Length: 410
Image 1 (cartoon, rainbow, N blue to C red):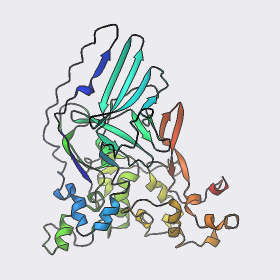
Image 2: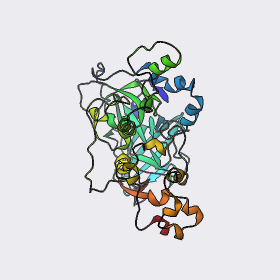
Image 3: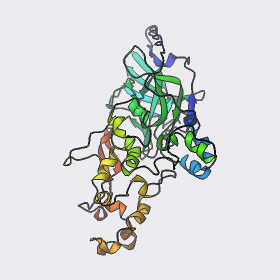
Image 4: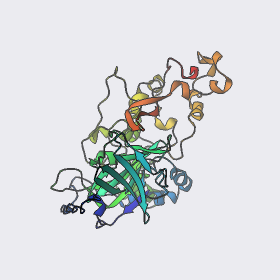
């Protein structure tokens, strides 16, 4: 977990359009708008608990190994301050440019004085237009790819260029039109809620989402799944509990089955609509009181990206196993393993001889339940353009069932 503090008075020169023309005097930069008055946080939004800002360190006192391995997970790395170590894309010559369908428009990734920028350069006859913004926050661990955010006063915006790991190249950010340079896609609290531990939303008179740009906690920390550590630490250290919270293990351990699933569902059941402010959900409470997630039509196709919980709930395995949760297979405290290794979970209940395709499989494939019954498929929601090609992200389907044609035949 990283608590990132930045200087809100950083120069905003790169937020303006820069004009230069070889045959005319440079035009004047548009004036920088004054910062909106920062008012008190929304009254109904709880401030972050002190343990949230240092959760990893507090938990590491007793759970050092779990904290060490968790630091390498995609959850922990889902947002980071921009640095050469956290940005997966390349800034070297020959690898730092993204061509677009518009032959006059290119994007360049730049590194200057330890900072990183995306520049959109539009070359028209007799006129060159540039817009350049600093990469402030990295979103995504980099396993599939990354997107990037920049601050403009107290608002966050997505940058138009992302990085796609399988191509090892810069690409248009998902949903962006190839050949355009859009720097104005604002970031909502609900988006941040699934990629960070905490952002404080502020009440301002202007429209849009506004955040405290000085203190925020990047990455998913222990508290997002376990809740505040204060009561747990006091109990384990022999001190009297200072609250009425139960004296058992921390969430999600010990919760009712539905409450356990909801800890994951806050981000893995689709975007949903916020009922209460982002980051106010506490593990163990009813998720429906905080986020409205409409169940999909039973006959509708659920995309493999975004709502893994709904897909899992359609599975016969899940419906027949009252104790089955996400952590039956996933160890969230350690980096993900190769998918085939999860087959040992399947074989705890199923025998290989029960597989109808067993006679057609090699011994190695016969022990790999996951790739056949939870295949990797193309998403129609997570789509991007690169090099005049539409790219659909490939995501593992969490609906456990018999698929036809069987993946092993390909």
